[in-house]
Image (cartoon, rainbow, N blue to C red; front, side, top):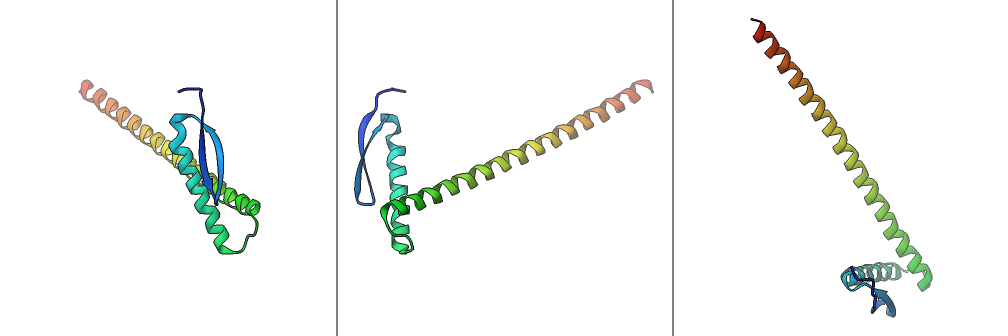
Length: 109
């Protein structure tokens, strides 16, 4: 990845912002700016929040909340997967032990 940044202009809530960005990260920057712009417009349309600064903070809080919930959900999925894998491993070990015991009995007969 290049350490050079290039100037990129994004438009959020009818205002342009100039941002330094790595060329290989521009698509993500544009997608992020579109998401933020959409969220801020939704909040502004609701009429419950007045002022660009407050709209920006509410949009940021909403997006951050979604990120926290997503991380929590993903963590729970990972914990559940680890538990299922451990249970499967225990079952396999028990089946192998039972098989070894049967093989030992058959050899003695």
